[in-house]
Image (cartoon, rainbow over all chains, first blue to last red; front, side, top):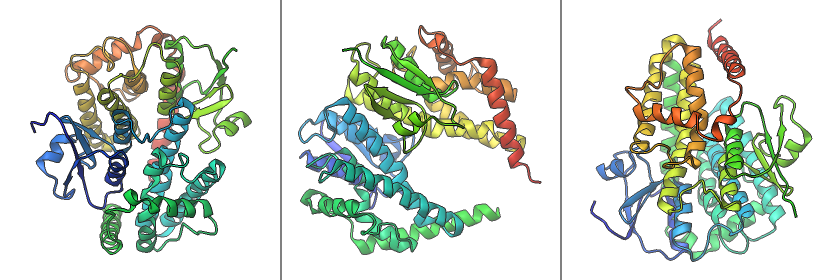
Length: 231
Length: 224
């Protein structure tokens, strides 16, 4: 690839990780070329640009690839300074990084595990997910702002944002209930505000397509687990 | 007004050691609080209520948790002797490899360490593949950061120590000089680097600690 400029994003239509990067680029008004990858049939381009993980998203800027969505967000924020995602103050930045990690590892990940597991494992995963939501709810309440970062969408909002449009689908596919709006009013309100932003809501995958995709994935993961157990 | 910096750590935590090094490299005065994680202090639970883990850095009463987050905080607060590269792309690469070290590399090394003898060969394959990737990153460089120690060196610091511990306990050679010349060389340089070399936890204590851990894991894995 002989690029000397321009921004490319390799993504997958339903990937919440790629969606984070799309949101960041859109919020900053950065023009980019989007390349849809079939992650089940990886292109030579993807393998070349992300040799370590072979996953999306990959951002390519001035011919140089960057992988891992949260790392890409930090890069975008440093290169394009308009509509800053992270606060300026080092302590506030550290808090944002902490909560972004929490949103990824505890909030998003636990919902995924709850969806894909069964029996005792599922019960444990749902419990973890609810605990993570409780912490997130507490912090949102403590901040008392429209979004995690304040009055405008920021770093943590973007990282956690996948739950705004995928959680309900995961709950349905996994026959689980995590987001009880009476138990999590701050999160429920945050989701509403987040999805209300035109750049956030634009181009999100359709619910029925997500349902079909995650149902299939969930079954595949379950059968892989069974074959490992009996192997 | 004098700044107050406290670091909650354990004697052996490689994560906490990253912050010890960072503070010392920047010449920052701080108070150390050693924790016993089987009997956590009220202060630790107050400063890190969500995870209750070390390290926690408390700067003028405000806590920062998660070692890689703390490293970035330290670097942004005390700007002399920068640990991270200035260039955004190079910074991204440092963050990427630090995460790789903690996610993929550490997990695969640990899996090898606790593997039963019959599973060791399989576990070694993934560990060695990951080591090869790290080896590539060191080509043409003394340290990950360049001529001096930086963020990524501190992030991989646990590895410099743990490799020899694993090799002694398991009686095997994991990072051999022929297969991994750059990694071997980095380990030698890092272990002995100024400031770094003064902070290593006592080796005999580490050997005992990890020997016991390994025995416990192997005993738990053995079918009764």
